[in-house]
Image (cartoon, rainbow, N blue to C red):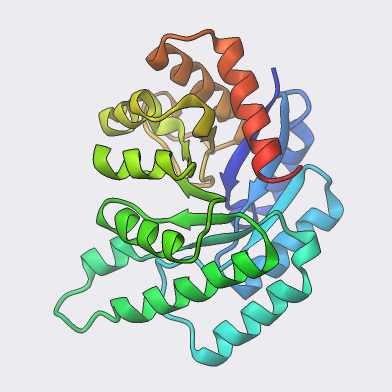
Length: 258
């Protein structure tokens, strides 16, 4: 049965790996890739890749786990996204810098500035009537929910989500989607989230080229690994694997209007 990779940094793969992945999509029953962007250069590359392959569905944004963009850089990016809105399926990847903040020493980290950048992307997604793809885990997830509710955003996708049950209950009530990676095969935290979260609000992703452990150790992360995620969700939830395939496939198509 067919799947989508609901979150992949396709522009970060070497060209030879990109070609190998594209050429193997059909045989691996992968219908498409939601390719997220890191910055303006990444956005342009994902657009170029999408122009050459109908299986690639790009999202445009600025990943939060990197230095803050200048005002001019963010203005240029926002203007570029607006000019290319018809070619994207979502605004993303955007969010808050959990790991960057965690590794930063001292109290001078400009967290509020990252919040202000994120809010600009939230407003852009609302203005363009596009879904938003979020990097927001643990405590950041609840704060991002505040921002989404403040601006009445309903189409939000929290990728590779990590957080507590209270936050997940709030997200589910708002109809926000989350997606799971191949670490669902060995990470108890991920498995617990998959057991708790409603099936009709779940998607599957790789976040490639991010590497994984277990049976994926030392292997190139590929969209075909999503099949492992689907089967594992079915096992955790004790439902028919065919039902999980259908639910996740239809959820991506509906959410991203593919």
